[in-house]
Amino acid sequence: VACRPEASLASLLRQQNALVNSLFFDMDSEFASPGYQVTNTKEAFKVSIDVPGMKATDIDINIQDGDLLTLKGERQTDTSKYNFHQSFSLDPSVETDKITASLKNGVLEVSAPKDPAKVEEAITKIPIQEITETNESDEGQVEEVEVKQTVADEQKAA
Image (cartoon, rainbow, N blue to C red; front, side, top):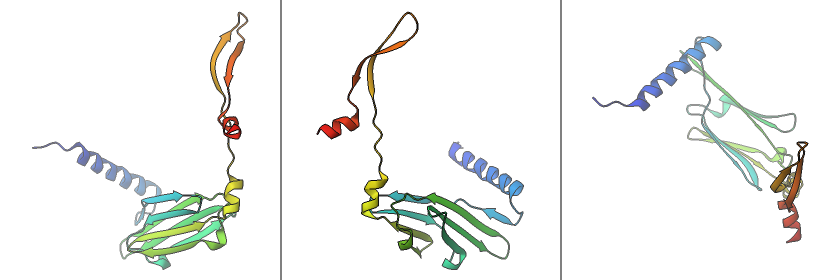
């Protein structure tokens, strides 16, 4: 008989999820956290989220407070109720009035294009000082001996 620890772990996780669901949700409800993938480029913020068995009418997508993308879904069968809720913070360069969504083969795709002019404004470079050596005096004070140029200063010089 072969031992499969991953099977035991998967069984344990299913039991744990069932226990949590029974404690915090309706007995006839299953709360799911579907798998999703986020892509954030200079051109767009995109989310792909697995919602098998759901129709477009089961899903609600909205923007809250101008920068919070919220995806909610609920599907009921004769014996149970499935729902999810996922939110994503959007940066100021996203053009919220141009967000699109599509549902195909159980995968919800949400695309939020960005304004190229605002992308550059939204990026703030944080300089890093690299301290190579320190001396400690008899009074416990630390004296910096050599400080290299920050990354930001090196880029400005180039």
